[in-house]
Image (cartoon, rainbow, N blue to C red):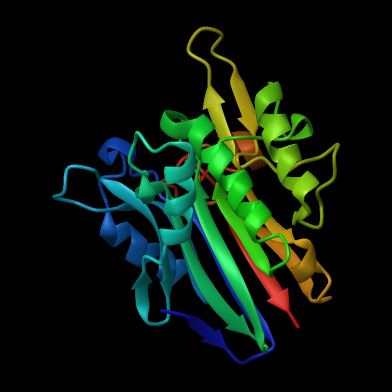
Length: 253
């Protein structure tokens, strides 16, 4: 299935729904409520609920015509080259094509889980190499922050994201952001120190080819759904159900 948009504006939301181990018990009802409260043309969900099949979540897209699980075939082939002894964990990955103003855009929705962290990072970098001359939007929960986007620097995470930019992909951030004032999307209270640690784990990147099209692109953050939004923006949550803030990409041609 392809998404086709003929107007001069398209909106895409990326959101981790916090369904790992069924922590978000509202499940699919919460998805419907989210889509009602936060409008977009395309939703890229991580930890989308899937009840009754043992594994409780997966990565998927939602559009005007309903859910679109997208394709993983090309990425699966890459995985089999580097890790032929194990199955590709496809519930952490999804890709779809969008046609916007006669431009074909590949959207890659990833959830870089710690379970397959090194494998998924390698396959993602190889996949981005394959697509570097195409129009691409890469988004999702990377479980990684640049050194200036976290209060506790993890050098491996910074190196991983830097490699994405080295291939030719550019991070799209909010208007108020810079390398001294990032917008955090996740906050964790450390059990030993009882101190809060904030970081930006969710990102949106675009390929250099898409950047050269010259469209206006802005990112807005959906913090109200984050159960720890008081730590991130100093405001108590009102629609909270997840531990990640959402990101809304607005593209105007």
